[in-house]
Image (cartoon, rainbow, N blue to C red; front, side, top):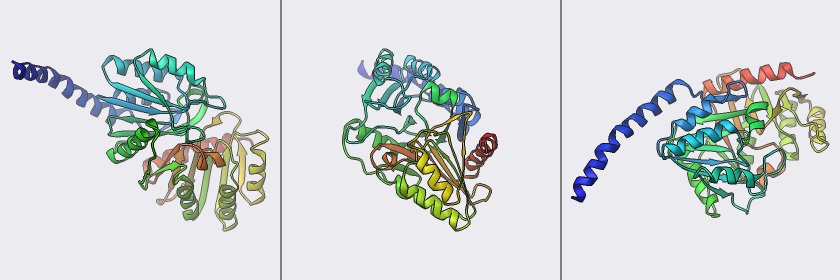
Amino acid sequence: MVAAVACAALLFALPQLFAATANTQEIRSGSIPDIIVLPDDGMRPLEDLIASAGNNIAIVTPSLNDPTILKSLRSARMRRVAVRVMLDKNPVGNFSDSGAAKRQLTSMGIIVGHGNPSFGHTRESAIIIDGRALGVASAPLTEEAMTRGRAFVAVFWDPRFAALALTVYDADWHKARANPSLARLAFSPDDARRKLHEVIRHARETLWVYAETIADHEVESWLGEAAKRGITVRVLTSDTSPAGRPGIISLTQSGCLVRISTSLRIHGSVVLADAKTEGAEALLGSQTLATPSFDENRELAAIISDANRTRRLRTSFEKDWAAAPR
């Protein structure tokens, strides 16, 4: 009798399993770019990424209030996808109240936790789908960042990336220590500073930088040294605060070109080396190029070298640089 019931349950589940797999392949091949540029691409790619989940979704972000993402997560729960969301317990800046976000998510049947308190803040922003796909975002999953700021999401259909991100996620969830090690992912406070230095040091012609803010003497010195050895360094920021002014002055005095974006607030950072060459490489992540982002917070960046992704970053930067006041 038990065997018969189990067999019947399996037969009932198989069509749904195959349908979910087919739907995942269709979404993956059709509508999710390798680099999602926000707000230009709209929210559909992120909706499709979440809709591709068949079993589980793990999200980490300082706060989450974007209505499109919330609607997508509600739909995922309705098709019985397990969803966990890890938030920063005390988000700062323009992030929404963490308590309000937690209440809204919990009402959907989503399990909500907070990041490891051993970090200053949990600023990492990432979406892990079924242990097979990883989206690394430069911004929190808030309405302001997704629809009114310049933000990027790098999407990797690679179980290695997803597995490592999930291992670190689980360690942070349980307030345990993690030792991440994968060449193409850069975690703060573990190895992101070193990997950023490698990207800057390996540049041969250009360094194009999106920076939410610039307030780290070592990073400023690396960019300044690059300019002095003949690298064209362009830095685009939207930070006009008194705290960000010394970094801008330091870079300018070192020979870097700096412009202030007045149309879009920049979130996180992108450091793109040799944008117009076959050897282009970028670091894209939540880090703000400020000291706490590298030394105190839990943050995540991806190291990108494939042509499709670097081309999209180059196109976006060229447009935003041209639009910024000289």
